[in-house]
Amino acid sequence: MSEKNFNLSLLLKKNENFSFRKKASLVYTLSLPAILAQLSTILMQYIDAAMVGKLGKDASATIGLVASSIWLFGSLIAAFCVGFTVQVAHAVGAGDPPKAKRILSQSITCALFFLLLLMLIGISIAPFLPVWLGADKEIQGDASFYFLIFALTQPFYLFTRLMSAMLQCSGNMRLPGIMNALMCILDVVFNAFFIYVCKLGVKGAALGSLSAAFVTAILITYMTVFRDGFLCLKKEKISFAPQKEVIAKAIKLSVPVAIEQAAFTSALVAVTKIIAPMGSLALAANSFAVTAEALCYMPGYGIGEAATTLSGQSVGAKRGDLAKSFSWICTVVGMLVMFIMGLIMYFICPLVFYLLTPDTDVQKLAVSILRIEVFAEPMYAASIVAAGALRGAGDTFIPSLLNLFSLWFVRIGLSLLLAPIMGLQGIWLAMAIELGFRGLVFLCRQAFLFRPKSYLLQMSLPK
Image (cartoon, rainbow, N blue to C red; front, side):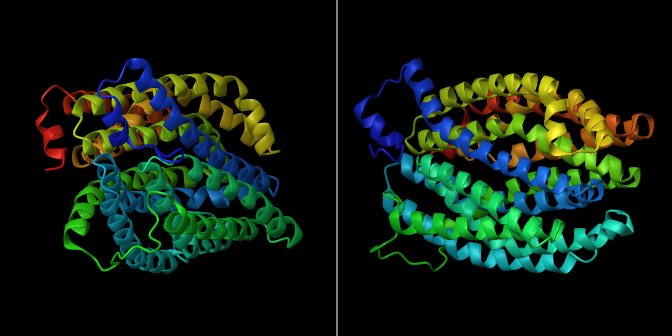
């Protein structure tokens, strides 16, 4: 086995029986780099928030206003990537490198068309988005510009995300971690230049993120396509023309995830619309609380990525028993890690908000709302990691329906009921209740899919 890539099919040839200790070791080996990559992303968000926070409450409210809309676009990118990366994980598990490379080439071709569509949509709605969300006139101009720059950054974010996911599903967790850390460092450098040297304020934050994403996308695409030991396309006679079989399977996997992610981020947009009339204080506090909470849940996404790789390669290797074991080990580890992170955040959040913003009113409100939600982190972890394991097994449709119901009926419904009574605290209480519900239903789905002789799991195995 290559030192850079984890390939389950090669391990199976050497050792048919995996002890619990061996499985836990593999989970740790794949999870740690992914967790570090996610933490570097969060560090970048903290730095962005702190830099913008020093510009004042309105500047923080500007970014907070369009943040949920930006996540909506990011979720569509994530869904696009799933359609191809799960296929790569299955090909790697089956010990079929040529097939994995063909899927990579197909993903690049499709990405170019998908990017054009996303950019056109983003550019078209940028002038109107702040008005639709009910923002004050004072922040509408900067919010429109920030979102416009984000729309132009889509190609770089997509290729960074796509190549990172391809490497992770082939077992190479180290390089994506390095690239994410590099993007974090570059973001600090470019932000400092555009915000403080060029004195562009919020516009500088947008340009800084664009520049960091551009450099990172070029580097990771080059390293994946021309240098990676498993996925390298150099000197390979592989066609980039769309192939019906690969595209059809990508659509089958991606569409449910796109619905799921669109439901999630659209719900966040709806919540933002509920918060916007509360004023800049509520928008800023909500924005900082969301940023601070990311430190709790991003390790869960790192473990979820490891779960996708382990589950996907196990399915590709026709080992449903291993897929089940890895999924539950990852889920338990994720719940434990996020419980610890939530507990730590409960006590340190006043310091975190002190570092993010000098506004004491924003600090107090952000502390009060975040402390309502941190107790739901373990169940949030269950939904994140279980979703990753289910995705690796090719199960994307039912999880998308579960997310749709949980977010729109539970979270939005409770938010509409509690916001008039409790204000911003009511919205965060609704979030905590919904996260607990979502974690429970995903645990049930995971138990159902990975039960003995599961029909769904058998259907997901290669023919």
